[in-house]
Image (cartoon, rainbow, N blue to C red):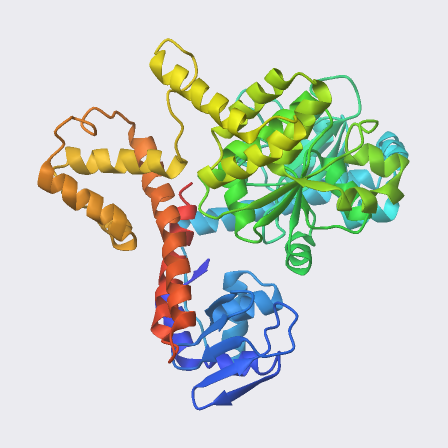
Length: 545
């Protein structure tokens, strides 16, 4: 059940952002505008500007900004709907709600998921869980940890579980829709320790199961369901969001026990893709809460491949990310093993982190001292680097393998030219920024539709004068070389290109508007309103990916 849009707008007209800012930080209001100490970063001089007319705030220091709901959301660590309800309560405003079939489905199945979760906790608290408890104790987790992190258990008595479900009006179709049963009616979890997979609202949407016997895979997740999308959800604990906001960065690790190990060490700002390959959608989700990521995947080939994949994915999202890697000692397979054997060493390891490309180069050098092989590995990485990143990385590589940067640049140019001149080469003939690929697909569709623009294309053209100029020139000159006419793509690729291109240009436009606002003498808050309008559209486009 969501709040009606008109109700949110009516509430916003009734509110004053100064009521919430001046009750949570030190500031002064002159007329309808004011300045205050920003509560989102430490400072001694007021740098946060706000206005009651547009109900907007903006910090010139940390760049945090938004409307009254955004302020309440951030200061109280709330979801958007909760923030709106919080504001409404303060003014005695009665909100109107909308009810859709899908929302009702989510509510119904969330309720059933909670009933099932209660059963798993009940089994964990029974004699049937002795082997599970012994195993968890051996990994360094006691009864208080099990309760705190809601770790539960399912034994092999599936008949008892089915009786419980029937008693609570949960049938096999419900279990399938919740991801507990396969299409051929097999129950996925037997004799497994269960870790609750939460959404951002801390609701259980799925489970990850660790086997206690040799039957089936060691780790197994719920199937995709109405509540759970593997390419968007992570495994984390209930303090995840508040901890990210407090520390300003997030750890990205490989497994369930790695997440719990860091929690035990005092770091709740940690998430795991939970046994699935990291997706651009998951990185997109993280980027909404922080731009700083610390990677610590397993010390094996799969962990290295996962780290390389992050380099590949980071340019496919709208926000620019700062990604570093922890250098886990080779004698530990993963973070959980370090936690079990030498937890005191983690603080030193945390200090010993490296920028993503440098980390990967060092990993290559730890495997071989052959300059040619290291260069070939770097060449593979280079296709994911921007021109500036490539230049900085060449400086780094030159020092590490004691070779002139000019020689490395010529070598890189030589190999690139050789690839282009040799069509039979398996390597790609050119490298490009991902957004240019999306731009080509959208441009091709514009050409094929004879420059008939729909609403989504117009939104993108309004964001980027440069792209609009390119399209206008193309309409004037025509596609003489069939550069765009010959581009083929599926409807799914086009839809993704529209979303990715909007996100790319939207973030650039937001930065331009904020710079314009900060440099203007009279502080035109209508510029910030434009920023908020774009941010709302960003949320819509992000939800399609």
